[in-house]
Image (cartoon, rainbow, N blue to C red; front, side, top):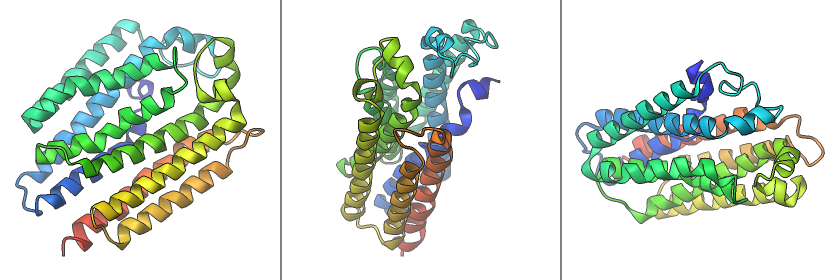
Length: 286
């Protein structure tokens, strides 16, 4: 029940991009880093901890709103399946787990960990005052590849910010699609989103534009990092999946939003990781 509250299975969205950032950093180290497996494990634990804390916090903050929304009133807190006290305890434990994993990685990760928590917690407030909340959510996930780079190298390389930007635009784009479901509810209750502000049709065009920017950022990273054909193939597959995602929804038909949001984006992240990891580990290493 707890894992369902935080939608644990959705960790697949950002985790492959974080692991790709770690592998790119490993590649830059000359493939000779001792203890890579241990570092990757701590990165996974940090990701799961931060995301679990953020999701639980979001559920706490939005419990009253979720209780008024027909689409979300069956969620665990508004439905009374879990208590607020439990959710707060889970948030604190998950945050401590994240901080512990950051400490195990390196001193810079630990110093930046409170900033990362502040970013992921801040997102939950944004729908109350800005239509750019989708981009804030995107950035909250987008910092994962840069954080993973720091975890491996102990410093930040500006080139990995292309991947941060790619994940930011990708996440913001699919979050806009998802929020189209609440277009009328958000307008009626004074909540902020791009669909609520501009309407569903224009919002979907903005989503397409953000996904175009994602592919541009991936192409720029391929050039900057001198990656090969597997990474390029992965980017083309991602672009194809995003085109398919947008074919599933329209301003007059949102019946396939869940398929577009959950299934397609899961494939985006997994196929991206398979091709880019193959490039980094097998092709470029030679």
